[in-house]
Amino acid sequence: MMMARRRPPGAKRWVRPGQDGASSRIVGVPMDLTWLGHACFRMRGREGIVLTDPPDPKSGHAIPKTEAHLVTISHDHPGHSSLRSVGGEPVVLSGPGEYEVQDVLVNGIATFHDEERGASRGKNTVFTVRVDDLVVCHLGDLGHVLSATDLEKLGEVDICLLPIGGADTNLSAAMAAEVVHQLEPKVVVPMGYDPDEKKKDRPFDRLLHELGVKDLTPVPKLSVTRSGLPGELQVVALDSRAR
Image (tube, rainbow, N blue to C red; front, side, top):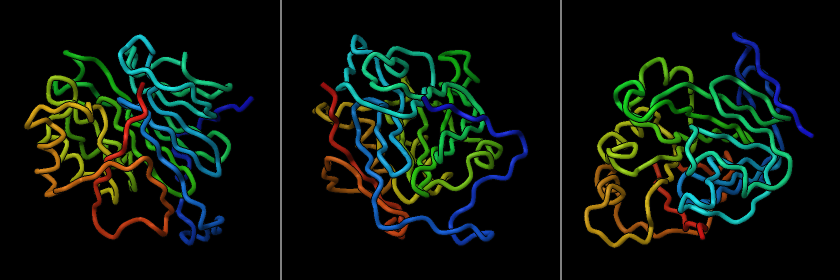
């Protein structure tokens, strides 16, 4: 059974290959990112399988039974924090801190589900997960723009998993676009919306407008390597595998 080792405060943060004498890892094998629905993603890399915010089957966001080595949970809500559909014996991280699970480095920072420091909807943990030298940031149900301190703690982000349920749930389109500009990721993957909803002017559609994106076609999964990251911001819509 794998164990999570909490990194001591002030420990040197990880560096990319080629920086500060870090040795290069094996390159060319992509990390696969699959959207299982709502805020749940599976990251499959050489260093293991990471699952984010698995929902309870009774929450309305049921996912297929999925094996994982590591699970992150952004907040205690049935749509984000159930292990009923998770296979294996994963390490589960559900709060702020710096962790190391085998070769996967995780950084969780304390944020809020609203703009009132949690008074309306409670707390939220934003996680960055380094898998195969790619940094994936899962924002959970973040409900506000990030502070300078938040941004310093998060550091460089390659792929941002962005909630776009609307201001009543997490981020409005304008706030989501501002968070994207704050983090400056190479890839943005929206989450927390219903891809089958036909209503016009959805928060998802407004986000695409805010980011200047048109004609976005969903794909089954995102397969990416560090060297294959785009030079400019790219928004990727994934097909949901929710049942």
